[in-house]
Image (cartoon, rainbow, N blue to C red; front, side, top):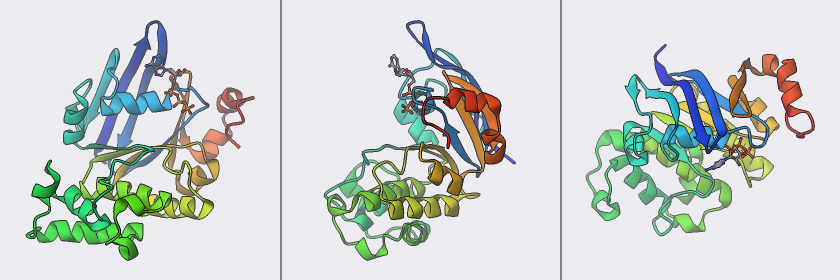
Length: 248
Ligand SMILES: Nc1ncnc2c1ncn2[C@@H]1O[C@H](COP(=O)(O)OP(=O)(O)OP(=O)(O)O)[C@@H](O)[C@H]1O
């Protein structure tokens, strides 16, 4: 199996406080990795370091063998790291279909991209994403008018259409209804194997639906790694979550 993301000794020191501390892991191509950890464990900061939003002070990140450590954020994005934020970065004035077409063309400049002659491969990718995300009935809807869940699925769909090599999702179900959360789990499960995804999430019901391999962070460090059953039975994990209202 090819290695998608190799993180080696990644560290960031904020004036003496190590929010991420010597973090090492290997994420394989097509893997779905869940990052768990109590509040303040360093999960979002880890995503920030991978995506280039924050510069690390130690360690290395390789994407399919290419070092991307501390490269500018837009360069890392161009290398294929796609990140979904809680506030989606869709074009609110364009329709759902137009958003997907912009994402498929992979070029900057919205209107330049709204070309009539999209290549067949782009169309196929868009069709697959529409099916996956159930956005078919709202293709002509202006993105700004979508429900919260649909907006999140559109942004995820855009990352898939863009062919991001590794997709980073930070609390993708935040603010979602139970039904929307379930649909999101379905989408993520359907992406397993064909896409490499890192998910930070607190909602354990959701994590149970999607999880394969889990990395647990605590105080910036990797505390445990493995399948759900192993993680739940790990005394160090239970200890880390004591009093935090976490894993349950
Ligand atoms: N730029 C910064 N300067 C100083 N400290 C920071 C900075 N960014 C994050 N931190 C600290 O690093 C720690 C880890 O924060 P982070 O947001 O990564 O945790 P988290 O695991 O994502 O938590 P949560 O689950 O609550 O979102 C926190 O104590 C936070 O205050």
